[in-house]
Length: 221
Length: 197
Image (tube, rainbow over all chains, first blue to last red; front, side):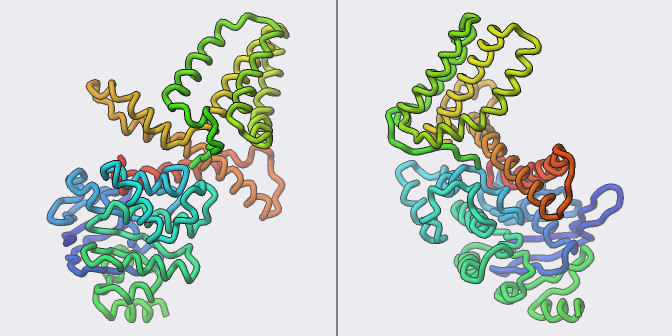
């Protein structure tokens, strides 16, 4: 469960990126929608512990700002710039980095499974530098999902993908019933698949619930 | 994400990474004692022989030599300005040999093996508060950054060409710096979200 109480993010001197947001995210899947610059990605960064905030933000009742070590490995995030998320030289090695916590004799089998699940087997030995944006995005997702986080925050995970892989990635995002998904997206069809939808506008929650998409569409005309 | 590894299965590829590092380190250090002489240039044959022993295609050697060519020209000019020709030849021989040997090392060693070895080698530093895994990760990131920055240079130059503007030869420097800083910020975020910070 994710709880936000009066969460505010400001950038000096006076830019307010999130303004006094309070919400409890209980649903297995939550979509955050809104225009560019509305505060969606800032909210994702708060949840991933990447940005300072005032107020309280907790995951599993652990304060995000101070509970980094307790939450490490339990919260995974796919950042919007997937290329930055890939660290190792090849696809297999990058996923292998996420599996290094496993005993050595289990790593190869786990790697094969992850590669297969994400349709990356043929790209396993390809240098990450030679991958397309969409392939990098799929690799970033595979590497994060491989750590088996309780909470997955995905910031625009399908923007660079063609229709086939957008579908594959979408299905993978929704695949686990045990994992809580927070999806930041402009893809309203994808957002509609979520159990809960939050429309963020001007750094505040403008509307929440199944009709949030309708309100958002009416707003943008 | 720089990947220079070229698999051929040669004995150099199969040699333990720590041994390759030792040979590289000791060999590079030993070059300090190379006497000033035009004969010193023959030492460049040592890494070239390594390329042959590693069964690397001539194309790979050609690529690596081409990458070095600008540096050799730069060294030649600067050395000939500040040194006698025989000293310049020795300095060029030393540096070319070291860089070629280092390139050969990266051609014959998987980055993952290098990281594992660095992690093992850094373990004695643990009591001093160092984290061997983080040291190894820093090596991986350093290598990945080289490839990224080369990509940014290409991206910026392509963007400048696409806009049809003829700018000074160094006009890519500032945009590449900006892109690199932004990328560094994103990588820092990525390390946190992957639990690697």
